[in-house]
Image 1 (tube, rainbow, N blue to C red):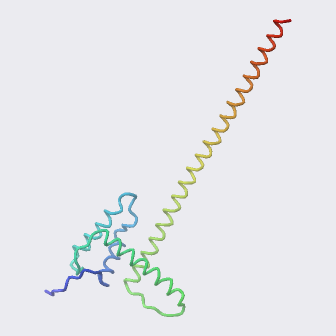
Image 2: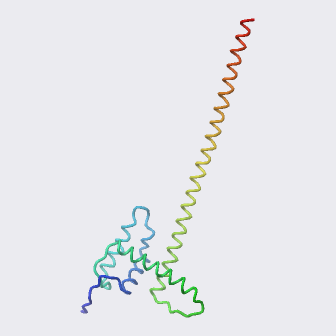
Image 3: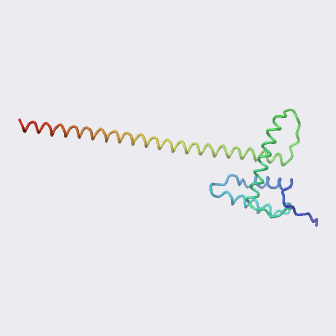
Length: 164
């Protein structure tokens, strides 16, 4: 049995295992209010893995580390896109991070599209309600004017007829 020193920080192996676990569980796609549970599940799976040689982590730590890795990978992709014509060996870590960036981008686009659709439907309902309200108010106002002016003129006419 090999005794490995337990680290407090993520190393390259732990980063790769984190990326693999995030790819498998997709905790970034958790619904509103349930974000911490999937990340805690990822952390527990990493903590129970014999390949992880670091102190136990929490879900918040796993989420923060993955966000850091994601930001670094996006920066790396942007820089490597500028260096066209160079051959770069894609390690398994780079490949899985590229997959994750694509799936997260797709998820964010889908979520944004659904939110925009719901917002558009809500605005359409509000506008149709406003149109109905305006029409009803204008009918009420018109109805009151006609009834007041009609009743006032009848009373005046009756007064003149009585006097005459």
